[in-house]
Structure formats: structure tokens, C-alpha cells
Length: 165
Image (spheres, rainbow, N blue to C red):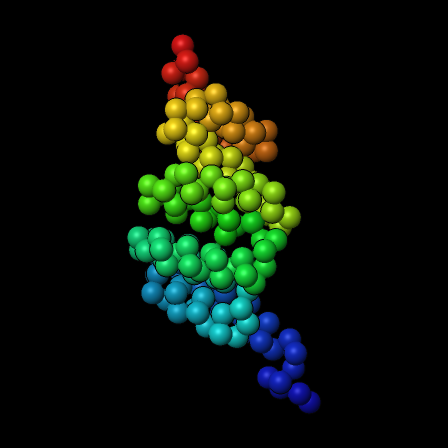
């Protein structure tokens, strides 16, 4: 009977390590999360593990390291949308708003991306900072079309609408 030489063994190991990394991250144990994500990547590189490793690094303020992991995620799976939005978000945190816009727009059209409202909210922040209040309002309305109950978008929309009055 085959053992770890089975074709699915690396994938299963990667998934198991990824889940342990995610659990550690949710508990706030960033050191353990990083180790588990790295183990997952050693077993089989995935866009998810690179992206979540980047997310964990961002919790430590290592936005450049987080961006590097997102680039690796995109190399593994260019259809996975999370790293595009995450790069945009990290660039915003680094004050590099103009660079962020292109990444956020790529997230919006990525074939495999679930929280599609996030890049709209992030782009609204970029546009508002640039003084394009109408553009920011448009992006927030797009986010709220996707997820009507998303409170941060609703609150920011109300704030920006108040600026127009």
C-alpha cells in the first residue's frame, strides 16, 4: 500500500498545515502561523498559503514582506484575487496610494475572488485621498451593491455624502 509517495500526500499535507496556520493566526499566535504557512508551502506551494503568510507578516507591520508573498501567490495562481487586493491595501498603508489603484482594479476582475467588495472600498479610500469624492462614492456604492450590509462601506459613504452637503 503506498504511503507518502501518493500524489495527493503533498497536497493533503499542505492543506493540513495551512489550516493549522490559519487557526494559529486567528488565535493571534503569529509565530506559529508563519511556521505552519511555511510548512504548507514546503509541502506544496499554493496561492492561498503565500497570501495568508503575507497577511500574517502584515500584522507584524512587515508590509514589504507581505507584498513579496502576494507576488509569489500571483505567480502560483494569477486568477486568485486576494493577493491583488492585499497588495493594494499594503501599498495604501505604506502611503503609496497611486501604486495601489492598479492592484485594486486587478482584484476587481480576478476570476477567483470571493470578497469582491473589498477592493472597491480600498479604491474609495485612494480616490477620497486624491480628492475625487464622486469617484469614492461610486466605488462605495459598488461595494454596497455587492454586500449591502457592509458597515465600513456604509459608514464611509455617509461620511463622504456629508462632505458634499
